[in-house]
Image (cartoon, rainbow, N blue to C red):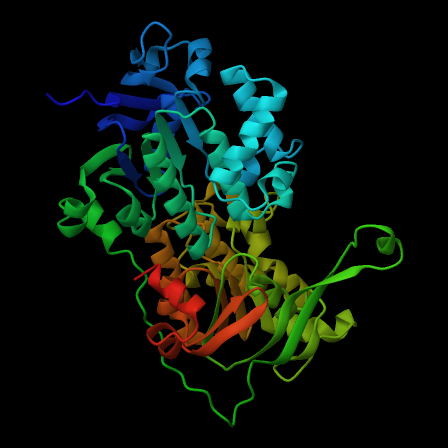
Length: 541
């Protein structure tokens, strides 16, 4: 006879102010199983997971969520309906029986307490440990997650850890009480490809070691293929397909599932070749970028130390081509972009359209018009207090102040139409604010703003990493079309090999500030020479 499931969800409905966002779904998770809940933003997958623990503020829930893993003194395997529990009873379940890893550790961790104190607090509240014993256990948990120097790192605050280390600290906190079920909400979205692999391997090891089940919330199909046993696909609040991962990937039945499977970036760029006659848009020789850092002890009173973020980088970017810069967090790729944008001082040769950045803002104005940027997170890069018309037209007020109001208006309308946003699609478009749009739509606004002053080059800093796979594909297709039509050059900063494969003509591979390998996209991705490049390519093959 088969053992009962650890979690049985039946007829789960979640609504806000009468509007249903989860519409009567059924799924189950067996003990020790890894189930992936997959879908785009707005599909209801995160609300589904949060509602199990009563963490969705202002939501009305109905249905059943029978959990058979509650630790009970009288009964080792007590059964409860999570949706029927009071807030007090749910607090006892959270963290002890069911734990959660949130998507962004920097916002989920308390910035005022060290990570060791935050883990120890869970052990003191849930397990009744003394402060000294809880601290020892917290250090051991950090060691289990692979954080180097766990005793020292336990005293670090979240901002003093890297993205991967913060995610490991959150995993340590979630596993402190050895829960039976772990809810992991996009646990690797903000991480680069090598760290993503490490976190997946870590979760697999700890899952087997503790015998717990995992409900993984994600839109990353590569991650699902590598990690999960079963998959449930959500669209518009409904589960449209579920089954074993191998079967669903081999033979998806629902059109939406097939759409997700087909959302891998597709290469559609002009194979533009460098011309000796044309001056390069960007030329760098021996580029070096450093930061001042404090020196511990008496010597630090008199001078600062130096951290070299980019060490002697040399590259050329020609008109109409894309140079992809790939590497893990801390590799120096974003610092390289800041130097190219003139936002951080650098040493060595760096010329944009034959000109170098100077200390005179007026002389830099022409370069600033020629080189624009699209940032990683469109929500934080767009002012929440400005309308779309003000945001997109801002560059014209700086670089073409002679334009009349109606001329500027027409240019804004055209720029938005060029990125696929019109008044007919979005009534009142120009007077709306960024929060009224989805992530992909906000990124289109950011691209329109960058194109407003007709630049020669765009610096694209992780332009699709915060987007769903289907939206990512749409934005990449937009960028490809704009490059073909306008002859734009792109400096593309990313940790996603699939994006490099789809967009780049040339590639730089960076690690610890050094350029390990460079060449055309085919040379680097098809015949990687450096072991680190081979590792990056293998993670997406």
